Image 1 (cartoon, protein in one colour):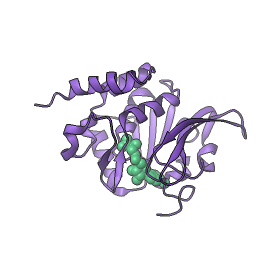
Image 2: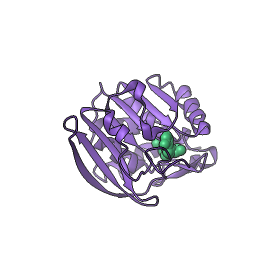
Image 3: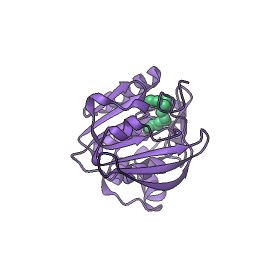
Length: 216
Ligand code: SAH
């Protein structure tokens, strides 16, 4: 029998805490969300491995540590409203659902929208809304956001996303080439002024869209 709860606890200690993640809300969410329910059935036994895993539509569910790192960098409060671009499996959206008041997540692949919606509904995440569309343009109906996290890499930070940040809102996103990027963190200081920090090299699937890598 698979003791997923024990594997999850071990993942949090060995992959997340030992690498320096301290945000208690991130750690609590990672201790709670069953990652095994977001991976494909044939990968369930690997759900708590220290790596990304394949999901439908040739996409991936990110490595747990990278997800934790990005969520910590968003510096979230329980009352925040957050936008995620690149729903994928819905795993990161579920973590966000535990951490903040309201989550909007946008996915371009219809197949993944359904995949994520089914899983989030089964687990009862009522504060997470999955939208289908081009997330490089953000999700204007619910803007502005306290936090925006992009789970796919683009050539630049999309101007639409910068416009949808609240004052002092945070954005975390991989920016660079198609095959390798740097994780950047933006804080909106005023209407046109953003603090920009480089958090180091990462590898994400491409952000395909109008303000990403064109139309795939
Ligand atoms: N956060 C996800 C991992 C996402 S992988 C998880 O927890 O499982 C990145 C996702 O971004 C892929 O599903 C891909 O289809 C999606 N994506 C790429 N470009 C996009 C765009 N312009 N708008 C919305 N989603 C996009």
